[in-house]
Amino acid sequence: MPAAQFQPMVFVDLETTGSTGTVDRITEIGIVELNEDGQAREWSSLVNPQTTIPSFIQSLTGITNEMVAGAPTFAELADEVLTRLHGRLFVAHNARFDYGFLKAEFKRLGLDFKAPVLCTVKLSRKLFPQYSKHNLDALVDRHGLHMPARHRALADADVLRQFWQVLQTQMPAEALQEAVDGLTGRSSWPTHLDPALLDELPERHGVYLFYGDNDLPLYIGKANNLRQRVLSHFSADHRIAKEMSLSQQVRRVDWIETTGEMGALLKEAQLIKQWQPTHNRRLRRTNELCTWKLLPLSEAEEDGTLKPELAWARDLDWGQQDQVYGLFGSQKDALKTLREIAESAQLCLVTLGLEKVPAGRPCFGYQLHQCSGVCIGEESLADHSKRLRNVMADWRVQTWPYGGPVAVQEGQGWHVLDAWCYLGTATSEAEVKALLSQGRPTFDKDTYKILVSWLPRLNVQCV
Image (cartoon, rainbow, N blue to C red; front, side, top):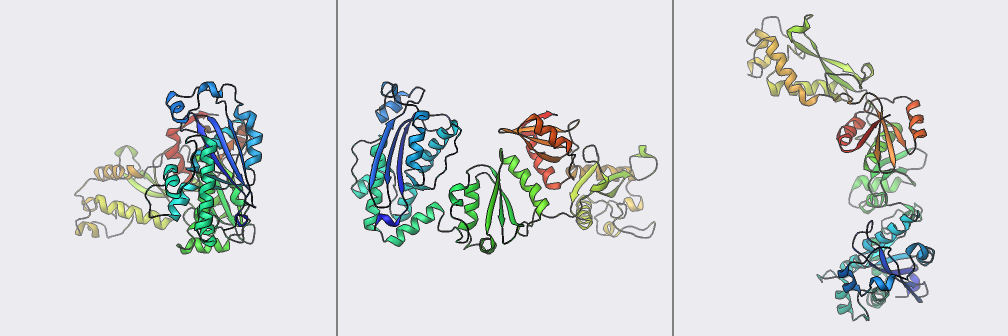
């Protein structure tokens, strides 16, 4: 198969001080560039990791602390490496390892490196599923590749080039192209979307927005890895009718990066309520919230008798409001839930105000042994009220546990919150003050649930 039919490639291998890209450092880089005309160009360099190479790593690679002492640092090589990688398909064995290390090194320099990635382990598995092993040694033995120096970067990178050349001679061009496209996400990318977005999508937390023919979002979602999550929609479009419909309608993709997962969840809930996308059914409901309050059954509050009363979100101060139970999208949902709670706990539907019967007569639930008899005096109102409070405890809406607004740190940003409401995310004290000056937004059920789950885990400071 002529190499010119494929985009320019770069085969990459790294030697490192360990296995964790955010902590360990690169000690050697090997790059083999393959142009569209099939011409290869090699480049490699030792790298001073500015840390000690562990003895077992020295034994494995043959790269010693003395060898890298006078080598350039990654910062000194960064421009050269970027030039060689730019605009090319990044090919590596266990590509997440090499790609992750390079991204971490560039990030230390304030650079956001991105490239389309092809993993030769996954490619081998896809093309040769009959074999169980797909490590580099297995590829060398299986395909008769030349390996002059194992665990040296340039030699390992060149083995990948040899493997690619073998595939070009053994595989039909269409099958090889299909496999590569499938592994890089290009085969499922909608034809009416700019393919440049594939390389621009960041591998970070955030929220993505799918647009149709106008400026109203069709769908809004959150992601821990924006690139992977967006691609997942289109990789499933032939299996799931909903994804197929979305894929056919989307004409533009935008995204907002966030400082972490909590920020992505909060921003998603905020934007869905703002834009009401047609494909977001679960979070876009905006019926006014209601809840149950337990109020005294008689004027003498000290007798402990209680009755539930429906209250609407517009009438409550969610930062200070106590003794409210449940968050419901409609009066119908609230009544249905209270009835189910009553029946499970043998509470009287008449006493709760859910049914009516003539005075002195038992309720229908009593006749079915689903009421303990408070309606006819067999249970005291105080005891019935005590059981009501106990069974409703699981539904209690938490009061805001702070004296006012707070800022919650996540990554490099601060989420500004007040009375279970999300005001926004700031990266400076001035931005925090600006968010506070805007006032508190409307209480939102989904934001409340996110904050109840996340606040105990994070650093909270009053502002």
